[in-house]
Length: 112
Ligand SMILES: Nc1ncnc2c1ncn2[C@@H]1O[C@H](COP(=O)(O)OP(=O)(O)O)[C@@H](O)[C@H]1O
Ligand SMILES: [Mg+2]
Image (cartoon, rainbow, N blue to C red):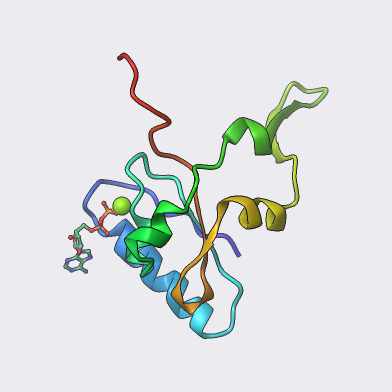
């Protein structure tokens, strides 16, 4: 099952997502939590310490996704590497066993 949470800032998305992730994990489900917020803070909500959260490296989208276009010119995104490998390289395991990834965040200072 995949659950995507999106909407207005400050509505409680991160709090609800982290709580659901922990509850599912505590009930024995294998849970992957992906933070795609431009200002990522799901790791903190999942209970990771600041030090552990610092170990989370932003996943480079170009390295793990490729766009494919079929004969009808429908474009779709596909993963180019096994998900477990991506988690092992970029992820951190939070309390309750939730595997966490950060998909966004600043790459560095720049113009604009
Ligand atoms: N059900 C709730 N009742 C009261 N405060 C809440 C509730 N859910 C979240 N909050 C608080 O509201 C603020 C925004 O929540 P957050 O989960 O960060 O929102 P979002 O991820 O949608 O921006 C946080 O300070 C959080 O602690
Ligand atoms: Mg949030």
